[in-house]
Amino acid sequence: MLRPFREVAATVLRNGSVLLAALLALGCGGAFPERPPDLVLVVIDTLRADHLGVYGFPLPTSPHLDRFAEGAVVFERALAASSSTVPSHATLMTSRFVREHSVGWVNGTTRLEGAVTLAERLRGAGYATGAFVSNFVLRRASGLDAGFEVYDDAFPAAEPNRPDFYERAAPDTTARALAWLAAQGDPPVFLFVHYQDPHGPYLPPPEWLDAFAPLEADDASPLPRLAGDDEPGGIPRYQAIPGLDRLGQYVRRYAGEIAYFDASFAALLAGVEARGRPNAILVTADHGESFGEGGFYLSHGHATTPDQVHVPLLLRAPGLAPGRRSEPVHHVDVAPTLLAFAGLPVPAEARGLALGSYLETGRPLPDRLLFSDVGSEVSAYASDRFLRARRGGPRAPFVYTQLRWEGGRRWERIATRAADLEALDAYLAETVPRRPIPKALSDEDRARLRALGYLDEE
Image 1: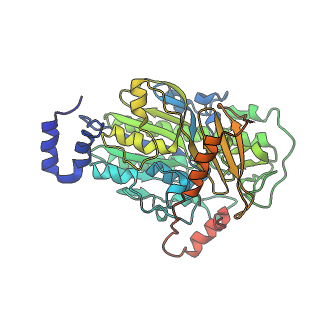
Image 2: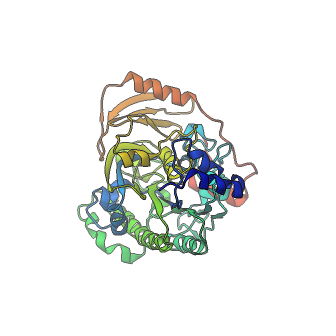
Image 3: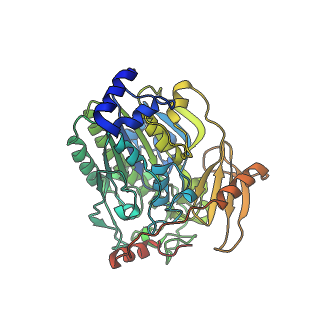
């Protein structure tokens, strides 16, 4: 139910500009809710959609997320903005494609500037805003802290193969997020939680591995261990676990990492529900992971094929009937969708859609091109296909390949569509300058980024 215009206007006069955006929404096709819902955005690092039960995985990696999905809308073909963490998060917060924000496709040495973020808009409308991140590249120097009253980027643990790369495990992140949530009063909250699990190396507690032994049953030949972290043909250096050299052994541990996260998701969801407020919860991932596609194993950031950018996206909100949708959606849709649930207008510069209005009315989403971008490779996805542009070096021309993809792990080459080519070329030509982190990197930060392979910018 909407509050009468007179009551809303009186509230605005009492509170100044805090609720002005919500009042404007009345004239912009938006709705000012009687009790604005809590908004929760959960982003899981390196999570392939096809390794969740709700997306058809045969083993119990995600029982709690699957249960959540029973009351949610499940998007079967959701796409990440990039197969690297910071670019995807910048898109999630701005509804701009990778070449349209100042992070660009670089992961760790650029920052978000010059765009009003989802958190800034919600904070300006009276939301309490808190973020809890678990990956060093998302530290506040990335600019992703804009609009958050609390931006918790404490990383207490180091990876075993990259001692200069710090992260935080799912239970610790959940505990910090729940403590903040419990301290919030009546105003609605925007809670953003980033989980590092299942990013490699895949080292879940041993008790999370028992259910996934079948993944090793028909294992392939041993894989060589590579000297670097971004090469095809074997196990990347940062992923190597002593005594393990077969893909199935690693996929089993990846599944265990997902289950480990899933238990923390259940605790987070319980904390959100305990507030007793209406809520809109959106769950997605920043990118996927390769398990042999294109000759790459246990890695990401090198391509924009479905193994890298097909991610889960689940949405539960008041007024939405559970179900499944097959149209492509994208990270650019996240900010507009959450803004609309808060009763706020979608900014004109947003590249995405407020999905709720389509879901509430049963309308199909428009067929559109959605871009995934890692710099040296860009793909433009549509409802049944994607156009992939690749180049072999900074000055090499792009080579285009049109492929059919209707979900799943297979795609095939088809004839190039002229309209797709024209649209992709237009996107490639419009690049916002990247903004470096303004102060020089500390020796500690530089060592961590070098260990990640993120200092060699294209």
